[in-house]
Amino acid sequence: MAENGPPPPISIHSLGELLESKRTHRFLLTLIAIDAVFVLMDLAWNILNPNCEGGEKDEAPEWLERLALFSLLIDFLFFIEIPMSLYAFGPQFFGLSTKKKPVPHYVLHLFDAIVIILTITLEVILKGKERELAGLLVVLRLWRIVKLVGATAVGVGEWDEEAVTTVDECKTRIKELLARNSELAARNEVLLKEVVFLRNLDHRVARELEEA
Image (cartoon, rainbow, N blue to C red; front, side, top):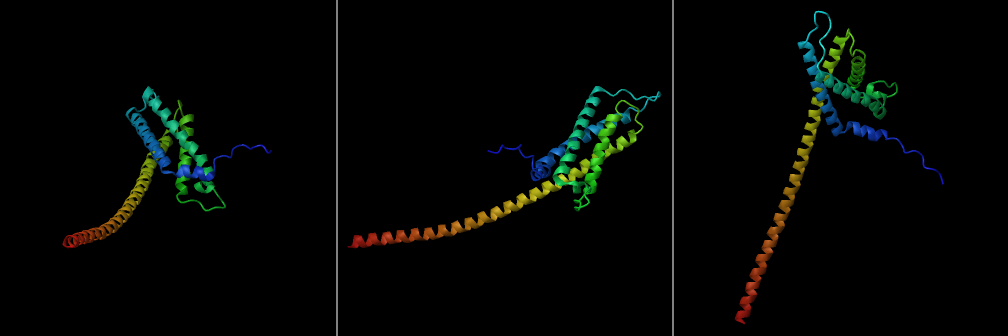
């Protein structure tokens, strides 16, 4: 008897459905929103605490360091999404395929992947050092806020489509119920006529029996 081989890896189709599901989109949108809040708080603190005369920056408070760690963790989650998308949708998802046509908006996907990789790299390399590239890091952080706006617009569009679909389904169901109600009303009218006829017939038979 042949031995059973190792369990097959998750299928590309299943992974693609998972990444494109509305639940995943909403989860990622929530992460982007949280990350954007962290970025804004970090930028606000940097603006309100400019460089000292000695050229060194004030030591960041502990809560800001924790927010930075959470933000970096979120970045790593988005970093993990890159190879998953590459596996599920192929290199054409980032416009890197020479054989298949790239997907719509592949430029945004590719640019977003580059931003995530650069952000993680700069966050790790520039940690605790002089930040000659701090301006670039700020630009990358601002891009994440722009991404939030775009993702929100896409999410709202998807929710609007879902709402429109739900409304259409409700309208169709209402039409079906109205048609069913009309049918039942017609049958009820026929039954009422039959009941009236049977009552009249019963009265007539009763009178004939009394006269007899």
